[in-house]
Image 1: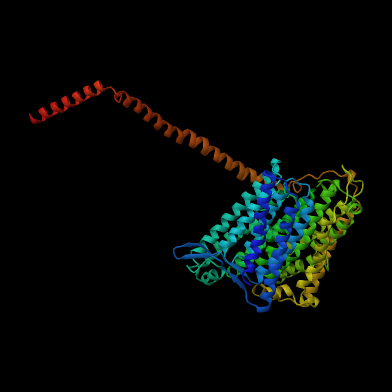
Image 2: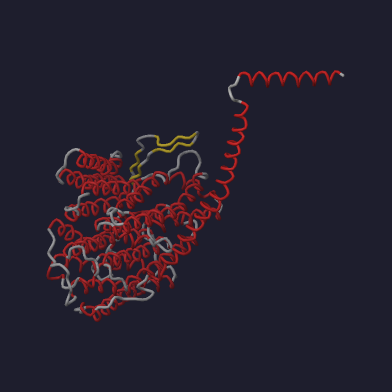
Amino acid sequence: MSALLAGIVLSPLLSSVLIGLLYMLSITKMPLAKKWFTLPALFAPFLSFVFGLIAFLEVAKTGVALHFEPYLWLGVGEYKIYMGFLGDKLSLFMVLFITFVGWLIHLYATAYMSDDKGYGKFFFYFNLFLSSMLLLVLADGPLIMFIGWEGVGLCSYLLISFYFQDNSNVVAGNKAFIVNRVGDLGFLVGLAILFFHSGSAGFSYETIALHISSMPSSLLQIVGIALFIGAMGKSAQIPLYVWLPDAMAGPTPVSALIHAATMVTAGVYMVARFSFLYELIPNIGLFIAYIGAFSALFAAVIATKQSDIKKILAYSTMSQLGYMFIAVGLGAYSSALFHVFTHAFFKALLFMGAGAVIIALHHEQNIFKMGKMRRVTPVVYITMLMATLAISGIPPFAGFFSKDEILLVAFASGEYVIWGIAVCSAVLTAYYMFRLFFVVFEGKNALHVNHPHDVSWVMKAPLVVLAFGSLLAGFMGLPSLLGGSHLIGSWLGEWGMRILHVSHETEWLLLGLNVTVSLIGIGIAYQKFYGYDLSRHKEAKGIVYNKFYVDEIYDVLFVRSIRKLSEFIAVGLDVNIVDRVIMGLSHGFIKLGHVVALVQNANVRFYALIMMLGISVASCYLIWAVD
């Protein structure tokens, strides 16, 4: 049974290898029909889901985590690290919705990418991406996790810059890769410190948990911050978020997979996995919660002025991740993971619905060049409405339950500043999401460049499934206040629900307040943008539209300064000093060689003369020395 854990990872990995080989064959030997790529691309994530479900049911039945170590991965002296897989309640919980939502996105992508020449290459990257994420989740130690961590980073670069013919896409891919490497440096520093304090019995989470109590508090805090820096990069939190909006350069299925259930949630999962560490350093946890709160508000403010449909959703992802970090920072791991779970459904639906609209409008992404899409794509309209209600926190949709729980945790923890920031973010979320929805589906006098058309059912069917998830997934965490038993919190055990010391009256008041502020945001959006006259729209300007000029500030502080430093080293030091010294010595040796060559001329008579002179000089010296 434990071997199923390896099968979950290997299924998409072997599929990606097979697709890669078929793609190489198709471009070198003979063209292949798309079905040769489609079948393994769809079968692999579905098989991983089946394996994950079987493992999940086994753990539910026995209550014992699955563990599988197929071989020794790294052995250096007394240190032995195995390629280990851990199937506990946390990892298998993640696996189920990653593989299920991932499979739906793969199905959607077969239609979205059907006319692309790089169809096979796309699914090679896509399945490799999914495999890397599953390895990250199922790893039994941080070093094996780091392989998956870097794998999703590499695949995100390949997928974001998939349309490499456009240089701006390559720049976006480079930006994502480099910013994530900055975060990964912090992650590596944290792992290095933990490695030297974990003993020689292996570098697993269990080993680290046993040895971590002996570490000095100051060192624990350094490790906690270092690991969170890695999470900042992967999960796009202030200040390492700048790659996320540019990542929209990739195909829309890539955006859906990255934002819904895989790469950007890796940071949240990592912090939850190291809960035994962060429980020892609550001050660092509070720091994480504040970063999450400010990231949620900052992204929400920027999203209110954006016009690119995918970038609006990108900033909404950053904002929702901020809520998740509020929860993990305050020690409410199941609340964060509950929101990860519900977010996977409605965010995948939002991106895939946006992609359907983009395809229907012949790759138009500006929401103010859309309008009246309700008539063109009624199925997309209904499903997008459900997802928008879910992310806005309107009951009984999924986002209401998980977001309300995080707000309750912030209030019950006495962190009223964080709670207030999160409430403001909720108002803005409802506003900018319904701004998008009303403009796209209800805007009038749209100036469509090309005649819009509906999309195929291969694209719409996953939207319908995800719409049901956006409606029903929240009931998996139904609180006792509403007659539930919070199944997700109960399942997660040690990552489960915190005990909140608030009365039911307070809970009802907070619940009502959360719904009210969301309705206020929707009401403002309705008043301003329902039936919006698109022919009179003027593009927004100002500091918010330009994203507070953070990219420009980073460009001055880091990009240009590093470029100038590099040019100084390359020209000022390397060329003018190092090269001149080395070349001067080289020319000196060459000149010395020419002088020596005058003596070494292969003339026997000249050599005989030199020998006679030498003997004469030696003889004179000996006569002088004897006298």
